[in-house]
Image 1 (cartoon, rainbow, N blue to C red):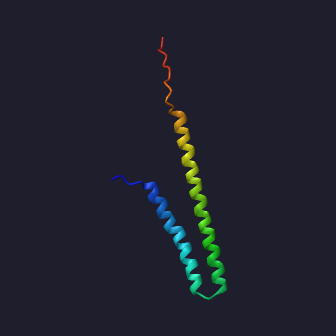
Image 2 (image 1 turned 135 degrees about the vertical axis):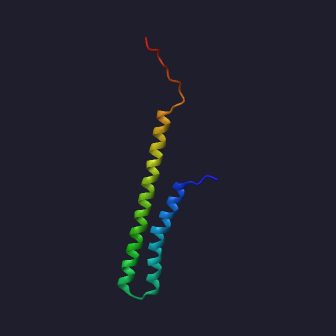
Length: 84
């Protein structure tokens, strides 16, 4: 069985960052302090947006590198000239 570490790391990043943000947002419901609510929700939204931004950047970088690999390793045969 082969483990895809890239997907595993993306999942762990999601759990750590977005999980903590959602935890603070849920705690904001039970703690009846308006300042805590404002801080918790702004922190949660900020962390989630940062995670989404980094995920999109990783995805676009992977797409760019895969396109470069396709261009570099095209299926057209290359003409090799003998050295005189």
